[in-house]
Image (cartoon, rainbow, N blue to C red; front, side):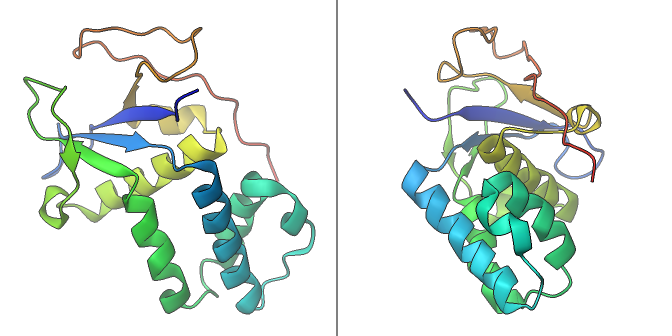
Length: 168
């Protein structure tokens, strides 16, 4: 089975409005190593990782919220860079079949970076808030499950249905 892929259309007003980015899931071994490096960075920061150590990537995401102010940037930067390796850009809105690697100048707003990183995590973790989906338009690709509606028309977008995050 192919890795999951989504398109993210930027709808927020700003310099990136209307741009379309493509996100592809990391291979399983790379994703596991990424998660382990993130967990180790959090542990080094002094945050009590407790139950999260055996809770998988979803527990790691919740732990990340707590750890954000305690983890050293030099530990986090390679992880942030690797997240963006999952992102490419669709530079021609008239032909969304054209996809090329992301370049620094493709993203002009910090909010876009945050949104793309969040979508990378959502793709790998398999969860999202319904409210989050209202901020981005997620397209589907042929690699999604067979029960997901797929359109060959790039102007048609479908939101992926994901369970809401459990409340803490």
